[in-house]
Length: 372
Image (cartoon, one colour):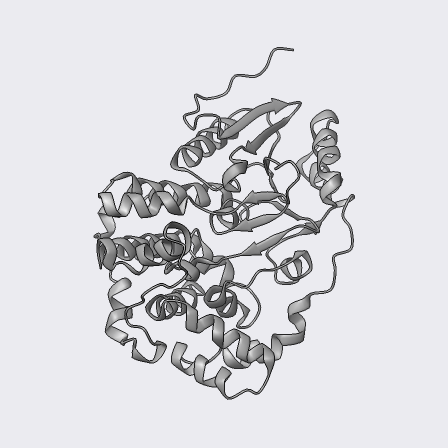
């Protein structure tokens, strides 16, 4: 049987795709960058998913990350933050395209008409969460490390992060959004951010079985994956859930910091120290984002996040941007000494936060106006 035709791909082999049996198989192929998403990869994933949605011979889509020989696996570490930094300083219009097209891809995945399975083996952060949280089945392994760590770089948990973190139990969403805490398989499943745990070493056999064995229905295919599931380890975060809910229910970031500071425990001290390292302004924006998103639909949240990310790079342009400064400190100069403005959580004004939530576009001209 000759290979089924694929749409033209533009990402210079950063996305590998084939149809095997009734499965559209996608491999993110940028292992040296932990399979972080480039604009070309976003365009290729979008083209593939749209193409396969209309191909009656493709029953389901499986997405995985390319392996790194001799190193721990990575599904997708996020977006290409070096590109963000370069494009922001150069005024490159592709920066706007990146976020518009990435968020549209996130929406496409959440609304995909066929089973879409994400094999979240290893590092799955930021943009990697964006292309996995909408999956019909989210598979984690003993190597999985899930997080939305955007506040580390003066950004906020985008790619629908407000929507899926806001739907975590109680106030865990605020905790994960502000701190960027990394979750293992047990916590991810307990919090509703993953569905089943499989052995990392068993994933190749799973893919072979899905591709080689016919499945009479979508549910039969999904059941074949669930049948291989292992018991997940206990949720480590359970030990701190009471404290998380007490502290992260506070009215604003300054109150959260004060609440943590009043608790005499190693966990509270560690958590407060982590918050003190982040951009105070973007912590406040993030808290507001997650709380607003709780009452939003996914399209509404993605449009809000598109507004926010535009402001991250344009409200204070160039080197004045908290995001540009955060990326500089973490990934460019690597001095890990960002110069935030304001420098203290307690000095963030409500007007500074409110400016991020004023859309720069009228509704009829919003770049994500067509999301249904």
